Amino acid sequence: MEQTEQLKLVFLNDVHVALGAKMVPFAGYSMPVLYTNLIQEHLAVRNSVGVFDVSHMGEFVVKGERATEFLQYVTSNDVAALYDGKVQYSCLPNDKGGIVDDLLIYRRSENEYFVVVNASNIEKDWNWMQSHNTFGVEMQNISDGISLFAVQGPKGVATMQKLTDLDLGSMEYYTFKEGTVAGIENVLIATTGYTGAGGMEVYVKNEDAKTMWDAIFAAGAEFGIVPVGLGARDTLRTEMGYCLYGNDIDDTTSPIEAGLGWITKFNKEFVNSAFHKQIKENGPTKKLVAFEMVDRGIPRQHYEIMDATGNIIGEVTSGTQSPSLNKGIGLGYVAKEFSKLGTEVYINIRNKYLKAQVVKLPFLK
Image 1 (tube, rainbow, N blue to C red):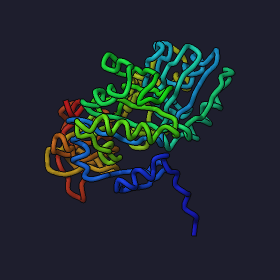
Image 2: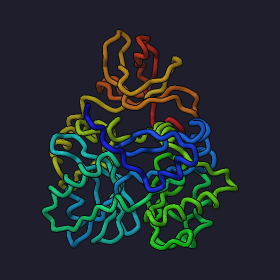
Image 3: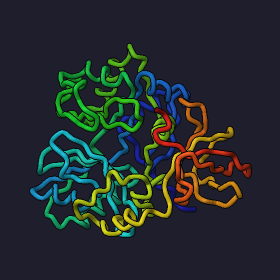
């Protein structure tokens, strides 16, 4: 019998177990998927504040005189548009027309960047970036030493503001500051998020993680703060139409097909840029669309998307029952001619063809 690979544990694993979290394997880690009830956790983030431990994510430091030049070449977005304290969403294009990973780039200075990648792709991304490092930049993989808490929801900033003198309220979307938070020095705090509910993401060294976790929950007590698992993280990001690597984008999907043209800038050369430029100019043959169920039913990943006559025109990549809207919603790739807003499509749910309609993102306005 083959040996199953040992799951990695986030630094506060014991805290989640003690809280009664249901732990599941995710991206090579044992992760909390649920603490109490998915709908309650989801609505806590939409209406007040909840905390995700997403310490499984990967963090690289990229520095050197040609750091900007290097990141311009390996990522699709325009790194030159960044300024100190600004964050950018981007992706690493591969040489086959797909995506190695999507990632966040934090500019600390012209010669130093902090890069955040998906947990399942840490080694893959590291190797890919290193293979293109002909720019003499220094890279450090600090993933195993960093804990990351996403304090998400309309009361997220108010919760964190109690713990620091940094002015968090004036921070624009997709910016970051570094300073003392909860008495801990050199904390990086950002307004990125993956829920569309507002809030902050807090990067801290593992040795300070428990202190920070406890401080956040004490600060958020008046707002009814709760820990939130990956289950609600998925329903929250789906309501916003945010892509999840491995579901909606992967090694075979072009950012243009995935509706990520806005992070694919052709005012510079990047890995395989000519290929993506051609897709943009010719128009993609398939597109990632958002759809809402008209008939009652929950679309799930890999369910077939059909036209009115029963032909398969695509596949669901992400789908769920939206706790905020109380209806089935999903994302999926379809042939281009079915991608117009308002187009009727059908989802094959247990051999029943249930009606859905192509809609504009985000689902939750």
